[in-house]
Length: 409
Image 1 (cartoon, rainbow, N blue to C red):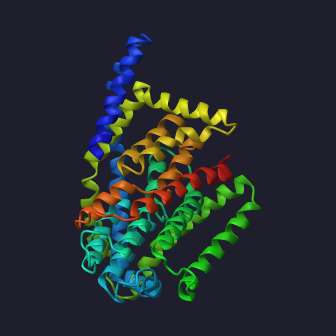
Image 2: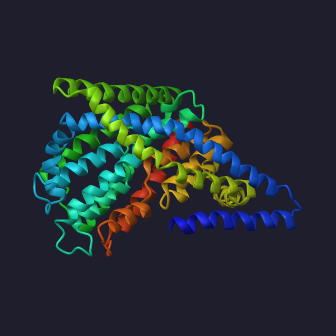
Image 3: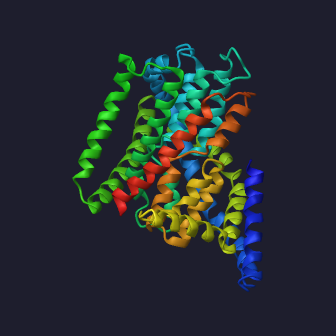
């Protein structure tokens, strides 16, 4: 899948460049494409330096949370809910703890750290699967919730914005929170419909209703604020949540007599190992996207969509953010490259860049997750996982665009 996508970027760029040369007489397009390759290779290293620090930092804190029992506590707290949503998984099964850790990593926006944990969880669920070639209900629900990208604290998005010079990297905190909530809700409802899960069960409602009411009340509160006040509140809450989480992990670890420094270093080493493996993928995708942009192919596609949107009488400013949304279901690295390229070409705080950042934080690489998670345990029949995951993906994209118009238009 990624082979075809990556090769397709270069083939489309070559065709577009030939058209520019032979039809428009623009022979400089080839020089621009070569220059884009080298510029994007340099940008990949610049981004990677900050990514090393981010993953190392957060996997260090996550290791403290794990050893301090915070993850196990969450698994126990969520046990009654999982018992209703995944009735075939016994209480206390190791899969529940791994699922909780995976959700925690996703909630912190640590996509690359969440993947190895998610693979362990999928293997644990496979041990309970009576038909190993076909995804169980629990595996489908886990994958769809994973693909719905519930991100409560998108630290990697903050990192990309900071690296591109954003004066306030956390400004997209609330838009991502609202958009990712919508995608997760749609994912859960679609799976519940297919599996006939009883979401009106008193226990399930006791978990879901308070969160839904809190989110609804918060949105009503935001509706009464000006755009400037909403943006300021998003920044404040983002920074407070970020530091509060760090402080909470450290204090709980200290109270549990965990050697927090040594534990942090242990987790940070894992983060370093995860981060260093990402540079080749980042270089590959950023260079491919740079060539696509320099050839004029990407601009041509966006102009076609823009004219169609304007013909419908709609505002078209979101169109420049669509490259991130279009490739996100297939490749996280390609979407990351599209996001960074949009920030560079349009400005880090431009409306398209803000929409692209929100889309990146509230959607997931559906086909990649499907291939990796199910492929790792030999599942051949995904059942309703693909349809439900793509529905959640679409809800995330639409919600991201609408929320950004509400916050930043």
